[in-house]
Image 1 (cartoon, rainbow, N blue to C red):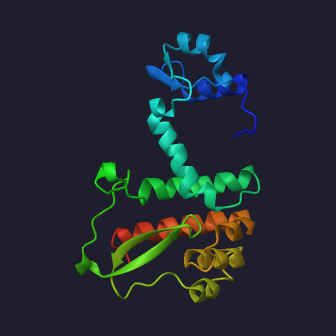
Image 2 (image 1 turned 135 degrees about the vertical axis):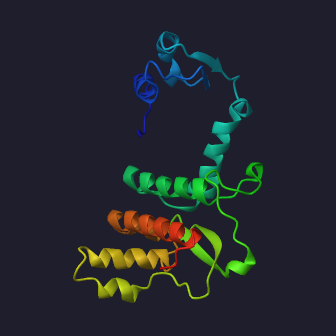
Image 3 (image 1 turned 135 degrees about the horizontal axis):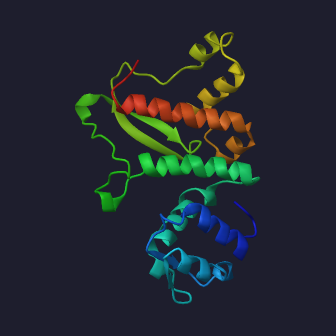
Length: 210
């Protein structure tokens, strides 16, 4: 990640992304000057460049749609303080996009398929994701409850950084639903909250309510 992508920086990342024997057949790109030095390298790697027309983002629809979704559904609603915070937010959004967000082209399923939860499975519960900016809904037995602060406090002596874990549980339960507020929290707390949220969702949707 960089604030000023140069031609040299772009070429190096292209080398890192596609080793010499694993490159794709085509590279669809726009007319940004950051690609100026890539022509010789892509030819040596056996990659054919396809340059889109000027001011025609529809010619690279998949990439433009993903960028637009990230902007509309995530970055337009939060305040990003630095690159580290941006990485944390984007990691959480990618997790939500791949595992929870419904897509019409996938018959309202997510890229990583979600199991169908019929009403007979239980009541509907909401699992906050992306620091409460989005939610995932599913059916769960009525006896199921989200992890409580009391249970985390009870184990505080046997677990290091117990206070941070308690704050993470608060984020999980929706107490810190403001994305800007979440960004002001300790970065370790954000990482713990995302992991707890993911683990809990996986157990819930797999039928494990222990």
